[in-house]
Image (cartoon, rainbow, N blue to C red; front, side):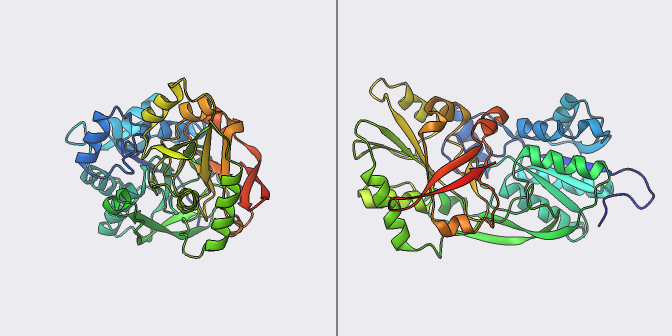
Length: 386
């Protein structure tokens, strides 16, 4: 399929931003669905990042004369397009400053009525569901092609680019006339209430069309059902044997890191960040500011971050662990990051590199390179972050 209008004109783009997407991530709320969660996040000092991430994508194709881009007013698209210097056409105006899922739905309906060729949207899995529902209502589910700009806490769906930059590069290619095949990609979402209770309940809600680009579009997250328990025990044993005294360990989310906590006999926040010092759990389910508070404590002079890899996608940072913000990662230092993963999880990437999407391009660049991954007892696998 080629992304040009049948009349021979240029590609007509549409953009929708969920400005509240991802707001609960850094403060440990594990999602942003629902007005009550948004209010909790704001009360905890959370700051929205969706517009920044959308702007990062726009900057990669604004020189390709994309305008006018159809969009929603204010924070749902207009503000960012104007900041990027791209002409825009307003097709929907939200009813209040704090937008809702209904606003995303209604904005997409309005864009479809305007006959766009390609829809860009910034958000997480909840936003992808809202977009899908709107496309279904308009009969565009199997017709319109989309590119998601990752900006949420939960980004399991395969309709998102690997990072805002990759989303922008894709659109730049389309605008410059590159030919892309199209495939159906899964729209996944988690039950956030179960997620906060430490249970992963993911469901596929349908499919949307995306460009075929294995380097720029992310794969669907793979679950950990087939992970061998013995391998996890070996990884945990290696980690524990190499733990150092008087070092603060910040253990990230995931089943692999949960195995470390289980082997230590400590309570674990499966989908959060826990802090260990001299074999004891000193704090659990930490948000970004709480982590920074620990880093300010003079008792903790040495700190390490422990993270795993998302199977199928390869993300190390930026998917479900936004509490490890750029500020936190910079304070800890790249040399103090420990990555643990089973070899099967690395094999699931089919040779694709590991990914980092912290929201800070300079930091992402600094984190690139070959890294040692703990894949068993006294076993290290070199794998590239790109």
